[in-house]
Length: 268
Image 1 (cartoon, rainbow, N blue to C red):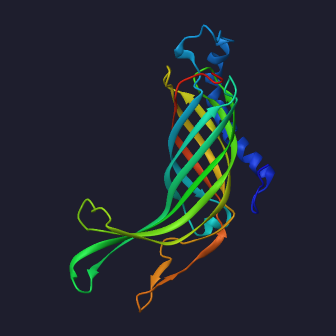
Image 2 (cartoon, rainbow, N blue to C red):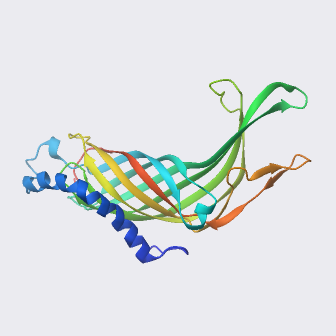
Image 3 (cartoon, one colour):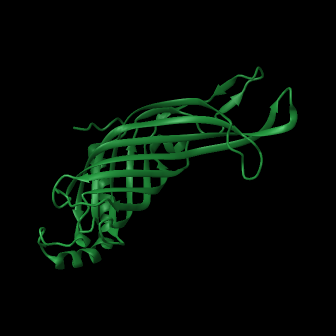
């Protein structure tokens, strides 16, 4: 059983799973009618164009919405995520899913002289980024809408989240030169749980059907220590001072992406 960390409740997780499914239901109804009309097909005689994929992989653009205390320090984050899932039953109702996401929630750049020896004849850009990596593994439950990999889905997973602040140095040319040095200034990580839900609706068929994937995922990290934009300052002696934030650091990831079937039927 996956425990719910401080700052979240089991009923709250249930409501979270129900919300995207309820929002997606009006979109799913037009797809459900053709699926129902197909009835039960002959699995031995079906053509490859109607196979539901046993495995799927996909990616999405994500917008991170901070929740609770985290919202007082961070406005939003932007990034990418990806997933891989394998169906555990012939109709694809139950799957095992792996998720991973990366997003940046703060960034600043300042131009400085390369060194005291060279002076300001050569300048560099120092860019500091605040980012989150989150990943999890767990079950996914789905309501398939036809044999093409589309449908409503929801699930939970256990994994980790990792918060880090990194600085890198690059040239000032346009477009910016590649970084030639970098430093991890601060980091914190640990266990995280996720709850997710959404809708996949197919846009192509065949052995590798493609679906549009719309969903939302809550990442429950519990308490974390982290830095935000402007939380690093330099002392007169050149050493760094960190204004470390400490709070609950849960967030919602709003997703829009694609899912691609990788061939084969569930249970095959």
